[in-house]
Length: 338
Image 1 (cartoon, rainbow, N blue to C red):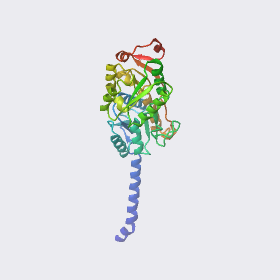
Image 2 (cartoon, rainbow, N blue to C red):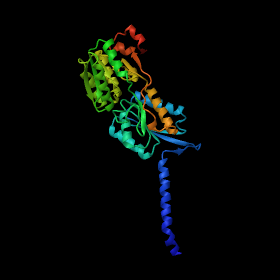
Image 3 (spheres, helix red, strand yellow):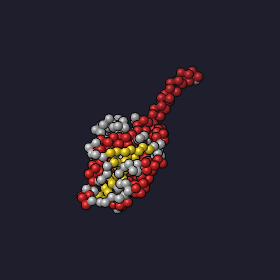
Image 4 (cartoon, rainbow, N blue to C red):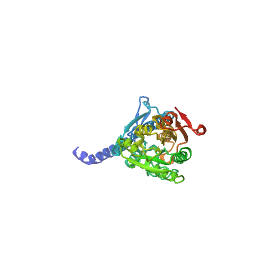
């Protein structure tokens, strides 16, 4: 009996270890997939957002709606692990790393820093981004015609938005100088500021800049441009948009029109924007996620997308508070909100 144990013990132990290893690999490959009460697989989506503000929130709402329309209903066969970095890049990277450790099935990255952190954390888990201004400049994808190996998504930068905004300021207002407030630490903002500078070269407009690093600095930056800028133009900068009311308060007091890069800020007191609904680009991203989760396409097979709609919207109440007289010809150019 002892000889038999010695003879077969090692091979049997080896086989057990091999089988255990295979089982472990199988579990890790589907670690985010659990069965619900109906015997269906439930997918887990890690949602990472750099900061709280209405545009990003609307994008997430659109994303969830697309998932629901695609057959993924929260509480039934999909669950969301929602994390907000509160404007801190270190937090953003930690969130992404935790998603990888948890073995989520897909990461929804809502903003440029969030997408960069997610891609730093994994080259295997599918990533779908939105609210990213320059996916190529942020090194997320090779081009707008080619996705990354495990990443694709939608940009919040329409090719014509900045050009049209600068053209409107130049042709439809009496402004000579444009004040820009942005966070120089946000790559998406730097990309937009460069586009503003390029567009301004085609006009006689002068640009004056004020840089911030936190939301607490936004009001002081706006005040620093009083007497220097005839209008403010706030691009889709996460830091500044989060504190847009600080810019609006200065603008209303000093009668300085505020142009913005996204429509949601109009409801918060800005004057005008060439933009699109963040809900829509979130929905577009959600459609991509559905295709990936259903196995219909890999991220690398889905090209990044621009917003599909662009429109000029003007806030009438903001116009009055910021000393702007509405022109009759704008009726044919813009939509109005009260």
